[in-house]
Length: 76
Image 1 (cartoon, rainbow, N blue to C red):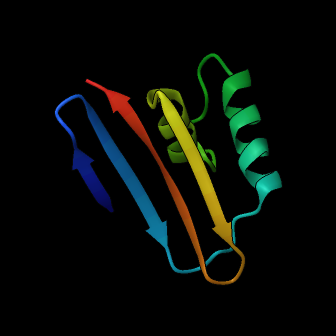
Image 2 (tube, rainbow, N blue to C red):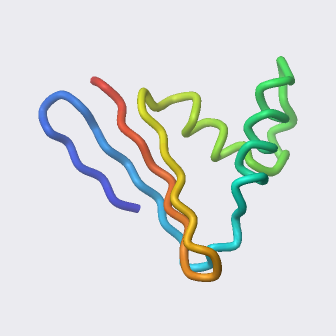
């Protein structure tokens, strides 16, 4: 995990060394978790959903077989 604060925004980034997430999975996880009013806390993709929901700016970079980077920024 990496973070930075510039006096106005906090930037957070989580990285893994697998690169196994796909673009389709990202959209699927976000769609499934936004459809439920009280989603199952054990459902796959909840962490990704919370990051998407919390950040003002959100991004996902996927380097297949190498790494996945998920991050964003939040105005404080």
